[in-house]
Image 1 (cartoon, helix red, strand yellow):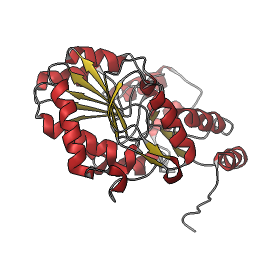
Image 2 (cartoon, one colour):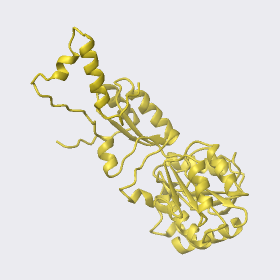
Image 3 (tube, one colour):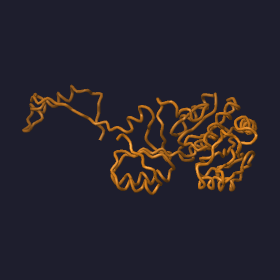
Image 4 (cartoon, one colour):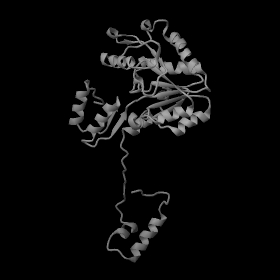
Length: 312
């Protein structure tokens, strides 16, 4: 058979990793789960690819169409109720446009989901009770200002799309990956402050920069580290199979998508086919050694490709 699918919980996964010798382990999930998988893989020295997510930010600059930025950011946050690994987790908005950005979010929410998102057929539910309670707890502890949403219906696993402004770096909503329809909005004084904030935290799986100023985009490209970096869009890099997908640091490691998936799951084995005819270069390397053989070996090494090197 080509593929076997085994359904189960984390305990079953741990048992499989402890019992079987896999050629490669690919894990998608949270950082804590990734650490557990990585530790289990060490038993058999199994290579691992970890795709772990994290808090992927969007930065909104002054040099951009604000309505375009709002639509694209909200789409990434509302798609599957924010339960995708590359959804915008939070927004860093330049202080000169933050008021307009917040106003536009209310307009676009109505445009996307109508007057009552609870009744919209286009808005998903939270995957289970545990995660709904986790989101509710984080939201109840926020010191930011809720300008939309905030309510939930536990029996239906429903959480309203929620916009929270005036969020500070130490807020509860900034403590972990949200993976839900809550959008915290932080105000920053400049693009450089946003760059420094990204640098001060765990490296994200994705980073989105909304600006038409290439100098601003270069600040993020040169000054930050993330699994991916996109200008003026969210999530669409996942649809381009010519681009690798993967994290860095606590957001994971390894690359996949398209050819990168083939390379990721392949071992590039060196195969050499050699003639059985004894040539002079073979005889020169066999002992006993003398000055003539040493001179021949030195000449042979000088005539080989000098562009190559060996790093020990």
